[in-house]
Image (tube, rainbow, N blue to C red; front, side):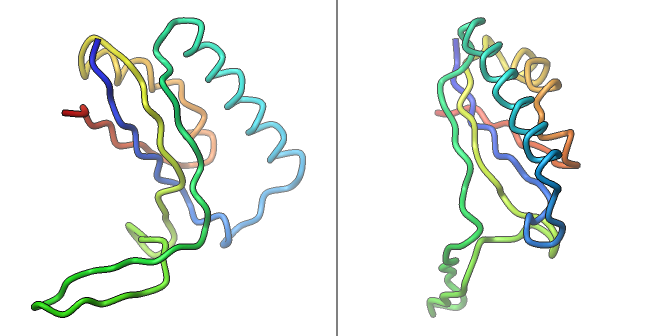
Length: 114
């Protein structure tokens, strides 16, 4: 099996704060989904990322440091990552179609690790 890095992109959590009930329901969906991935031996790990950080970028030889996180679009952040095992990219894609990130209008990027 191959290992895939899954970048989770989602709306910036500071823009719209979900209710406690919505948060609890979303966390429960994640736990259930991860437990299923573990049971099927596809899970290798993952974690959420904080809403703070730094972005260091080189521009014409000069380093620019800004407060982060890096936003793909103004309302969207990389909110976390997953590591999963699958036979190929098609299987990884199929496994991830039930990922709870879609409940919160997020999306994912799947990349094979070298």
